[in-house]
Image 1 (cartoon, rainbow, N blue to C red):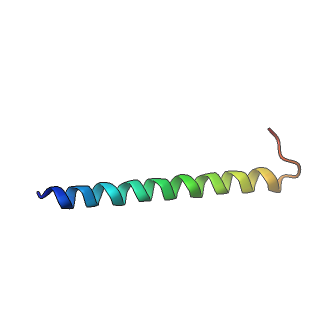
Image 2 (cartoon, rainbow, N blue to C red; image 1 turned 90 degrees about the vertical axis):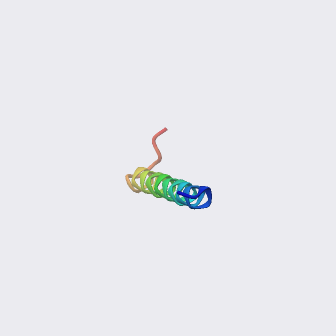
Length: 40
């Protein structure tokens, strides 16, 4: 397996992981603020 394809797979997985983290964080913030005042 060439190194370039391995690096491409790792880059795609990292980008997908960051996207999922951002999506989960946005959903968490939205759920926290919909309930009224933000609870710290």
